[in-house]
Length: 240
Ligand SMILES: NC(=O)c1ccc[n+]([C@@H]2O[C@H](COP(=O)([O-])OP(=O)(O)OC[C@H]3O[C@@H](n4cnc5c(N)ncnc54)[C@H](O)[C@@H]3O)[C@@H](O)[C@H]2O)c1
Image 1: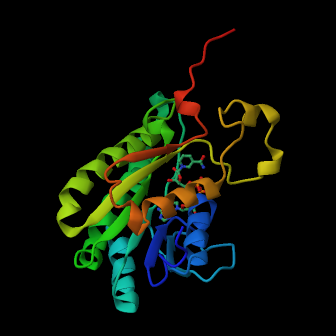
Image 2: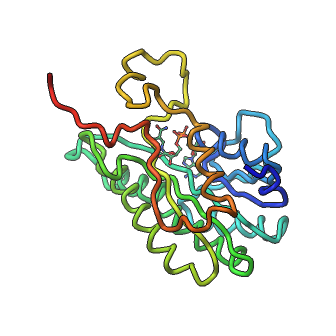
């Protein structure tokens, strides 16, 4: 990879104070980009990111975020819509409040941030990556709100890639499978071996894909979804 390609780029990663987003932010910073992280909690790891306190599900908070970016950076080249929460509750007990919270944090945020990014991307073009989930395609019980939010992200991604093509804004989604953001060493052998890739995923697996999708060389990849799950969604399971 051309290591200079992200120098002078301004990158915004939402929900990047920890977990997958934090590793995405770190990888862009290592490639020389100016990285802004927008989160409801400050980052634990010390890295040269600009932290802007934001609730990505709230319109006023997103407006404030983008007015700071406009004032300080004058441009935005890459937006990674990563912030997300999961609430897994039996469907009968899923409250409207929790439904709205998950949909607003995971899906409305992608609408709000992508729309707010437009004025900063319109002139020179830009790249957006939305973090969905393999739960957009497959389910365990009691995951309705989360699965719906992630399915919505994939549909929003292809709709936006068509609408914003006139501005040379390229939009894709990534659907991670099991990405361990806690203690990787504590995972069991069977956790790893159930994956065709023989291991559970790591945040760096998703971060590398973000760099790939937002590389100037890859502008022919547009409106699509990249599943990164060690092969779990293509695995057929029959009882022996
Ligand atoms: N870890 C996985 O196995 C996995 C699998 C599939 C998809 N994902 C998706 O990847 C993304 C990151 O997941 P993760 O595992 O790193 O999660 P995480 O919980 O470790 O980190 C999420 C971050 O988002 C922030 N956040 C939550 N609500 C917010 C809000 N309203 N405004 C701004 N920031 C907010 C949190 O403070 C946190 O820093 C999520 O969209 C998640 O749905 C994760």
